[in-house]
Length: 291
Image (tube, rainbow, N blue to C red):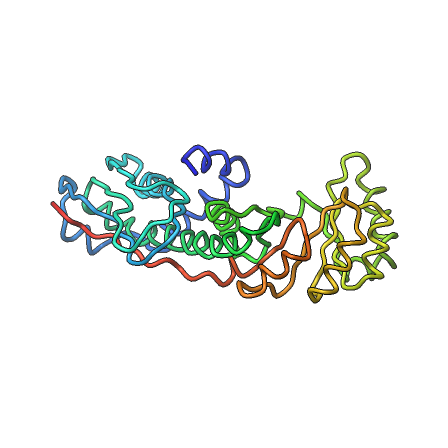
């Protein structure tokens, strides 16, 4: 991936939320009184960001954005040594930054918090993507993200090689048990949505727990059917009854140990919440190497 991919993703609403999150992150720290007391504005330093473990990189374009928010003049020069989505080894120089020492130190933790978190998600995602190498099934994320970090986390998923499910509640309409119970049936729920939104109706996905629900969802000709928490045998049998024009998705307690087997059932997609809600941060450091 390239910086263009980052800019293409962070448009409109996504960019608005990202910039708001950066502002909050810097505001939480307040002024760096320690650095202000020890460094003069003319003190120039060079810092290096180093990987302390093997990782897949995500979030590098944020370095400049964070520096710009920390200081509108932003006299820093950022030299990237790797690209978004690269799988790098422990000890790799990720980036070198030259600029006012006080600014580098003020922005240090915010930069590392974003990049290490996003790289952790990209790294975990890549493991699941690699496990699907033998199949045509595509890995999807979910909306199980940290509030305020939805877009950075879903962008990190792309860096890891997977695809996004829905970014929000607008892109796709998903019928779950609470919706279906309210409407009375899958058919009634689908009919109400299509009547409500007409020709502008977004794609509809129905979450199904058994073959009876799958059969009813098929009869409504929705765009996608999710097989929720089914066993491998149940999912395989259900997929065999779903026509090709309806997409299929397996979801629910999918792990790195089970995903390859589940793909053998032949779904178009498998969605995994763990790649965002359970990914650990990648270990990396930012050190001043010269003044």
